[in-house]
Length: 123
Image 1 (tube, one colour):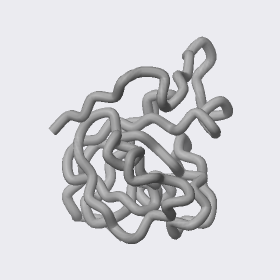
Image 2 (cartoon, helix red, strand yellow):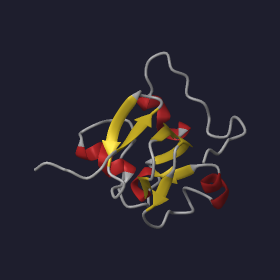
Image 3 (spheres, helix red, strand yellow):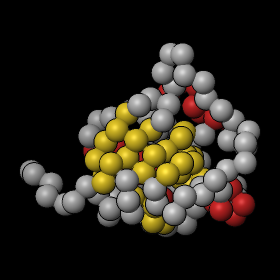
Image 4 (cartoon, one colour):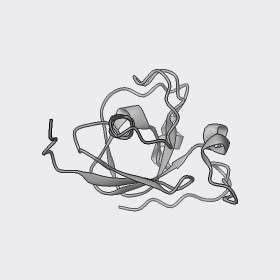
């Protein structure tokens, strides 16, 4: 079946992977639908925190509750979210959180810790 919904580009910095995602599906579901890799997959419903990412550019729309055990209000203000609970509102560039980033990094690519520098928020 052909999916005619409009798509927005989602890229994962550590892997260089880029995939199209519909504005009405989560960043994680869009990746899984295409059989792509980049964001770790856990419970897929906001409870485990495995798919924690940081939005480096672009904007996302919240799809449901996020466990505060995994993303604090302060982290959310700095661009962190769970990929299973966010949909793209524009083209998005993501960084997988450092806790699980190593297995998803390209050879020779350095992954920085989530709080290593002062975050900037783009509109």
